[in-house]
Image (cartoon, rainbow, N blue to C red; front, side, top):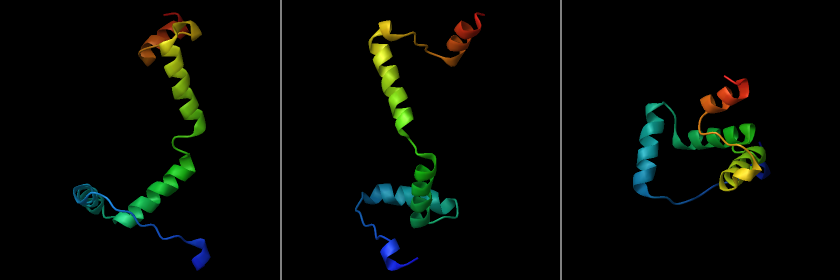
Length: 86
């Protein structure tokens, strides 16, 4: 990887937050930098949260605010009962 293909990241954060995070990461035999890079790669790979998920969340919020837009359910079990007419 050439120098033009990399970027240096620098940021400040609360010492207690960093120490707590580092202690968890180290227990899993990792280091902070590697863990953050893996997390970034995971977000990119799985597009978390992706635009479709965000749209779905916004749709549910609109439906809960205006019941005329469609039926909502409090649990998956309630939805399945209605779906299967049980």
